[in-house]
Length: 398
Image (cartoon, rainbow, N blue to C red):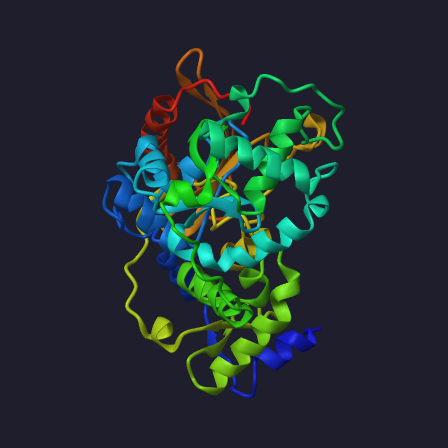
């Protein structure tokens, strides 16, 4: 059954039916996974890639290279980790904040997150247990006086009991994180997972912060970000883990359908899910996908599992938190996109001590075939291994 929101957002125009293959091609093109070097190279390429994608998720799992580097590697063949560091700390074209997870975001989009920062500032206890406003101000004053700080720079902490599994026993870390999420501090530098916190205005050189976006502008931002990075969108794909935004987004979609800025589309095999795209997207000539990518499970093409299944007939299983005896694919399985098909899923692990990439398990999926595809994937694995092992480093607590 279609939700009332989906029905209203369809407006009165009859959906245009498209085949799954065309929908897939549009999404791959929006993700720039059908081009060899769509953004060029260097820190400017990092900024351009993140601008196209809207955000790049950060994650702590490092069985192989962390996902923010992995996602950028798949779109920038010459990607260096130092390029992201330069974009964040020197050029200051990207910053870290929460989307559906902690992410790198274009600094030009900072104003769309100021409202969330202010909400967190007025009610810190909702996000940071046992954190008081006066203590947050105290750590901010310390950064103002002493300069940018990492948790390692603070030596006078007295450990406390954890309030939840991912909490820190260091009170100062909780305060730094709370001040970060309410916008007073920004992560000015990151080495592995060790974060350096700085005053937001001092880091960016602002006399005053950007003007906050209005609620209407934020809704348009969410829709436009999704259209740019996904090509074809649904309410779920636009509002991933952000259900509270669905009604406003649905209303804006309906308005754009009425003014012919968007058209409803029906994807063959997924007719019950309402989708929309821009008319020019349907008419565009799209470069065929011929690249082979070993994708992160946090890649934008994979992270929304139902959408990935709908477009690719591939159901990704993320089993890092599943007991070993119950896993079907492996601890950290990576889908392999070959052209416009996901043909394999590889459980990989970087053995940093011995300098090699281990294949724990190799699964053929979809139309994947050893005779047709294995040699090409092995070639991609050689390059992927070189990227993995170039990133060997010791990570500290952030």
